Image (cartoon, rainbow over all chains, first blue to last red; front, top):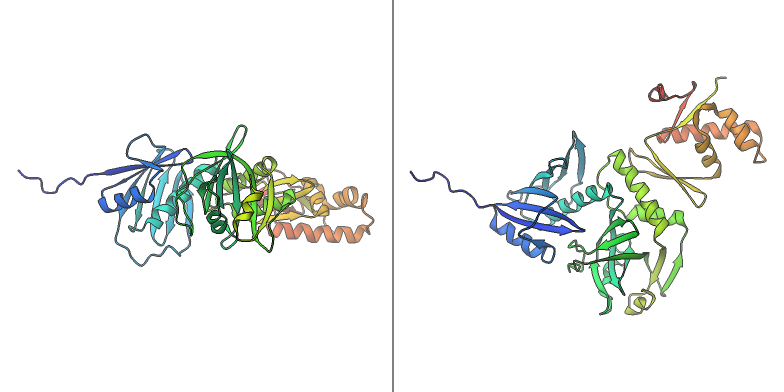
Length: 271
Length: 103
């Protein structure tokens, strides 16, 4: 007797950012192809994952990525919701499911949120910052939209390795902090290299009439860092963890204000 | 006039850095930076010591200030911090048992 319905093949891709491999399972070949392209350099079709998501693709509806993100936790299960996606994740079972439109922005947002939740419990964070490696050391360039993250990334000389022009990935290690490359791009639309290096400095970006590096007070450093940390969940425990993580970071990594004119000479000050 | 007791809210995160006390509300992640007198009040807010004693011992002893004015300012500050849910205030000593019943 013929099968009444053919079995849909499950396609699987492991996307590893910051040493956290996340498996995405989908039965949609087109979406799988989008994932392969979008996360090239950060993905593999095999390997173990810390977290696995089954992704269900639904036709684009009225939901929009401009809607507010809501991240809540109840009974050990996280719910991540925005106009264009709904995701659930249970850390204990390391499994979750995502229902979203085929847009790559949606899965990108879900991954960012999941990584912030993972990092919050490990004294790490995602930061609104470009980052790059020079002479074996990582440098972070933080700032809100328009501060110059894309500009300074675009001006990087050949001996500098781009980690990201938009979202930096920072983890705490025994001997300091390490920045990892990410596939989370900004206006440059260029993926970072999948490499890492110890963080040597955080620069708070400001455009000006001259290139200048200035020390800032520890208090101002913490305030600025917290302003730029990506944070979605309003869980009290995680808010406290992010606060303490910012203090730990500032106590170990020098923070400066970097005022710069938009030309390549600014890189003469870095590294 | 009843005495006022003040206690640090356990749900907030607080750290002192380079003499600057910063507090983040766990409820809405608002960040507060306390000035010197607010920091003194915050650090002495054990729920047991009445506010007037804290003002007398920690503020009037170190600052050239009228005690009545200092207490009035401290009460206003305590109520302001309580409104942001980073400090608890009560007309009774605040212990773990009654911490959830304060005003």
